[in-house]
Amino acid sequence: MRLILIKIFFICFLGLSLQGCETLGGLFSKDSESSDGGENEYGGWNSEKFRAEAKKAVDTGNYDKAIKLYEALESRYPFGESSAQTQLDIAYAYYKNSDPDSAIAAADRFIKINPRSPNVDYAYYLKGLVNYNRDIGFIDRFLPTDTSQRDPGSARDAYSNFDELIRRFPGSKYLYDARLRMIALKNNLAMHEVHVARYYLKRKAYIAAANRASGVIEKYQRTPAVPYALQVMQEAYTQLGMRDLANDAKRVYDQNYPDGPPVPEYKNSTVSHRIWDFIGLEK
Image 1 (cartoon, one colour):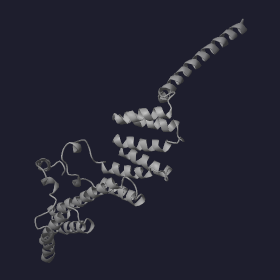
Image 2: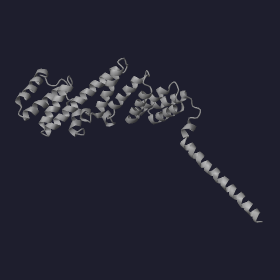
Image 3: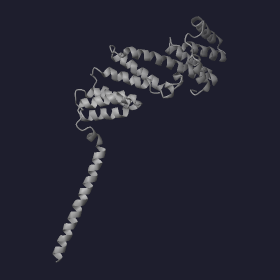
Image 4: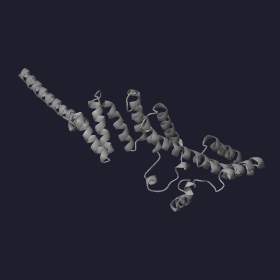
């Protein structure tokens, strides 16, 4: 009798154990399905399908979806003929999705993996674009702002990116646009130095102001900032009692800009700019 009871107990225990395993298996299966939802969602997709859907997402501005599709495509077809293009597409999608750090990382990864790709020049160009637009936010696209009054770090990075593109790929089709952007960046960087020099003037740090303005003359020749730098130098040297240097700065200014600066300063260019400057949100 005892043996029969033991057998019954063992059979019941075994049945409960098997049921528990089945339940756990179902849970793990569900977890796997949820974490692997992308695989189920894209089941049966080939590379052409991935590309078509990703491009559609980019065209409609759904960059989050485009990134997921491109990453799934790269994961499924890591060694295909178009795998390099997929890496570039991911970098571009990150850029359009306002994720500059991920875009730069993706572009650098492409350059490292595909140094001889015919499209590697685009990766350098894209890095420049990312840094060029890094500090442009929603407000900047609709209201007048003076970008030269901001931290110039991203502008310097963009200038360096475009300069590297020009040096490495003198025949690139992106050179024309890169050069135009470098001119704009150089003008902004020069004017930023003028703003710093004026700040020193307000704080009566006249030596620092004169040195900063002098640096504009030396490093940023033929930029619209030069006449403003000469004005700062004249005032700083006057305040320091250095009449000869002040007169030299005035003489150079009068000879080269008898009618004033050829390019009006940003804040004086339109009524809306003057209003924006009056509000002082850039200061």
